Length: 174
Image (cartoon, rainbow, N blue to C red):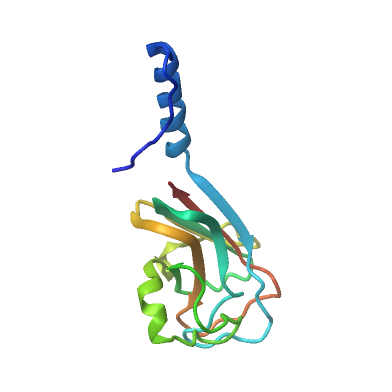
C-alpha cells in the first residue's frame, strides 16, 4: 500500500484540498523509467561477472518507499545470457567493477533489496540482423527507506559483448 502526503492551509476549500490530494496520488502512481547504456568491455565475461558496473536509479533523503515493476534489456550481440539484476539500498563496501565478480562484504548483506532475473527464454530476436530484447514484467520487488537505489547487473554464464552495447531500462514507482 502506498501512502500519499500533501499539505493544506487553514481556509482551503474542499475543492482545493481534493485537487491537492489527487495531484499527490497521480504523482505517486506514475512509474519512473531509468535507461542506461552499460559500460561493457569486449573481454569475455565469466560466470557471476558484473556487466558494466553499478547504476543508480535514484538518490534521496530521507528515503523512499515503492517497488520495482520490471526491466528491459536490449542485447545487440544476441548473447541471450541469463542476467540477474541485483537491487541494493546504497553502494557496496567494495567497488563494483565491470567484468569482475562482486566482492561481497558481510556489511553488504543488509543492503540487498531483491533481484530481477532475465533468463535466456525471456529474449526474442528482432529479425535476422536485429538485436535480442528481453523484458521482465509482472514483478513486485518492494523497497522502503531507500536513500540510494542501486542496480548491479550480473551475468550468470559466459558471454561476449561489444563495447558499451547493452541498454538497460528499469521501471519503478514510489
